[in-house]
Length: 377
Image (cartoon, rainbow, N blue to C red; front, side):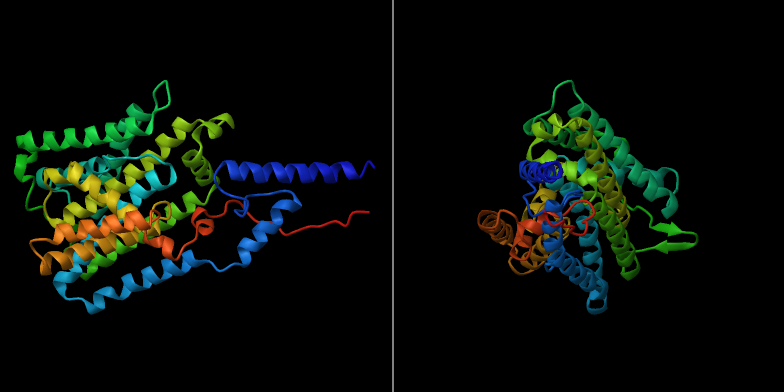
């Protein structure tokens, strides 16, 4: 009778952990670091199932690596722009898709970094990759920390609407400031930015810049994938599904939001630096609500909370826009709008939901342990 008490306790602990997963929105099939035998079976089942996400990621990477071999020079330049915008979309998906923070002003960090490195190149003649990219990343981090601290670290928890309108207001204010400030070029922005350099080599638009941007995107993607599959990612998932419950468990939800908001701003700053040197100029629209809305559409179209969905959404929207504008110059925005509306209506989880189930989309957390079963006497 004494030996049956621990087994009953283990069963109760297992049931409690399953209920906790369901509360956090993870469902009983998502594996977490589990100590009891009840958590080992779902982990083993998840491990033996076919993983679609790595296949999709591998296919996207292979296509991206061989793409310049089949493109003309002007299309390679366009593809490089799309890769940089995909990096920008990644920053928004991390903030919204995983933490549930609707940042309608993500372009603020993107454009601020672009203007920052453009001023460095124009006024200080600094174009070294080893200086301008860290500087742009730091600008994105600093600006997101300042805005995130103001919006998220108040005495009372911030609502989704408050953060969305706050970031939108910040983006709009930065846009108007840039348009009216002569030092920043006003409406014309800052043109004729010299190319980035590494020693005596100038990194100009073309295949080299494409693979450089693709390499940065791949590295940042892997870092984001590691982040969202860590225990910090588990806290983010719970924050997105039920913030009050996560706060009840002892997490400082406002601090978690501020951290992921700053990480997203850092990535957006890196993307803005690459974009400024690739295009050769910066202009106020880089800070404004148009690009902020554009990145929201990328993530909605591809699929939020998956990372790869943001990349796919940016590629498809930019590619379809390019083709439509070339063939249907007068009505292409209407056609694109209808396509986006149809996808959002019939596939709320984005195009990635055609191949990726909810179980794998949420993912697994912690190390799965081997099943241990002791025969009851």
